[in-house]
Image (cartoon, rainbow, N blue to C red; front, side, top):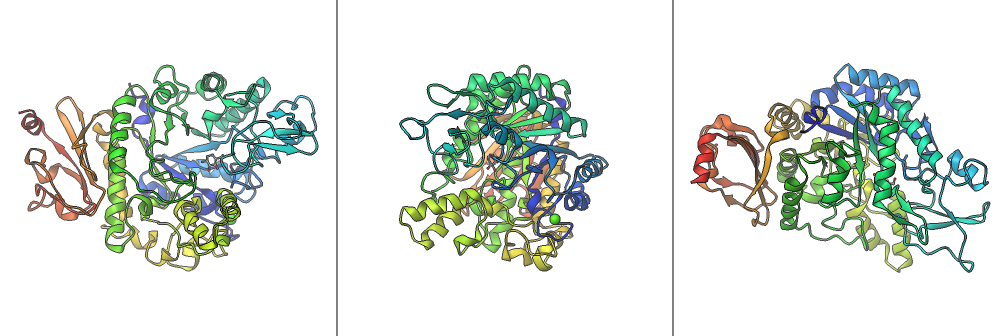
Length: 554
Ligand code: NOJ
Ligand code: CA
């Protein structure tokens, strides 16, 4: 049975640096988030996942933590976090923190002591001698360069999965595991109700003869972490970022009885177009493949385990630019269609900040506009390969995580109402038309569409406990699926293209009242509710009664 705590969750992801700046230094902060609590409550979300807010030199914007017990002063103080938690609670919203436990910053005290071989930190990281004056055998790190980096002080190499300034912790060292459990317990006591564990499927590693991830070890360590921290409080919600998880391992991570986590983020959907991989050349997004995968995961995972559902985050280009269409006529339609598609699925929906107003990719022109360490490292690599600036900007523009990190667009004031000071990353020039102020009172806006979608998602039980059935799996752009339980069923239509389709009669809504939500407003009107013609990017969700089911079975 799906645990009660997961049933009505709609989680909203905040990238604090880019959400709202309260003191005009150009960097979003905790008080800024608190100042927008009414907005978040009115949206209807139940939990806020904040990407890392701990002390960090910001090589990777907080994913390089230098102290797990201190708030990054740019974001505020611990008392600001307490106030944020209280303010959220007063609106029935809880807070999820991002725990980066695969690695720390090289500025973390543990790393500095480990470099100096200071007891008991000597083996807190993964150290090896060079071989014949060269680095030990290893692959390319995710953010470019070798996974091994030489340290001048210790005269050994350390292992890093991501950037060279993000050394991997050595989880085979029991004291590391204990210290990390202490961190989780500390934040639980402060009232934090959820944790997202960053890159968690990298923690288990065999260290010899070469360093390799080992899933059995990851399960073992996670089990122990659960037992010693969040597992002691059943109400805590956990999600693991499991970049390598397939269906089988996701089931194991999230098994309702024996799993270590409540849900995982799996990346099979999001990686279909190879974004941010290899040469960073944009490829097609194969919808038929996506359909097969959705079917595979929806049937294979649910009621055995659980996952978060997302189409965007701080790690990907904006979803409307990537899967939809930014052209003015289609921005609303395609963005609302994508949301409808996602919210109809089993799993907990996640909204990335700004997607609810249709924020899109930035019109990049020069490499020096980018800030993300990954983009900059890859720009360097492409330059070394001899690519010219234009080609480099193009590849970065299609892939860069900075697309999702531009300041949130609150209004058409200077800097989009994000700050009165110059923001750390440029505001998307489309803020004059794409912003909250413009959408909030417009009933036909994307923002208000999201509000309705969140509401029905919380009200209609089929969203949590309905089985999944793909209808018309061969169609190359129309998603059409059903969620059913006993004799009730919910149908979701989502046209991923500008093409038109005709729905079969037996699937048509029987009554205009059965349309729960539709992105073409005439769909819920008496004259058009059962029109079989599906228009560009059209999307709607409706209930079909018993009679509809009988028709289907004939
Ligand atoms: C995944 C995070 O989402 C990403 O932003 C970060 O760069 C890496 N993990 C490394 O922590
Ligand atoms: Ca600030």
